Length: 70
Picture 1 (tube, rainbow, N blue to C red):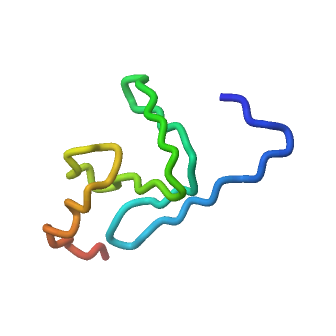
Picture 2 (cartoon, rainbow, N blue to C red; picture 1 turned 180 degrees about the vertical axis):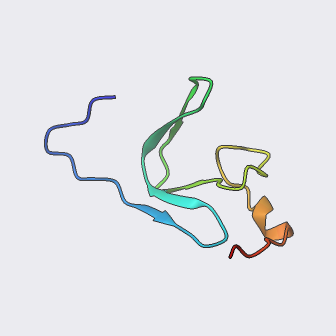
């Protein structure tokens, strides 16, 4: 996907136990090739795959305890 020559980079914030937060607007392309346009100021992308609205986060991660990694 081409980018604009002088476009500002998008900021992506990875949270410890939640979604990736991406400054919008943004187009998300899923593994099956579908494109989801999000025009929000900040888009929360699910990292745990528990969301009913995947790839968008619906806060399902809050209802589950994560096992800490070593």
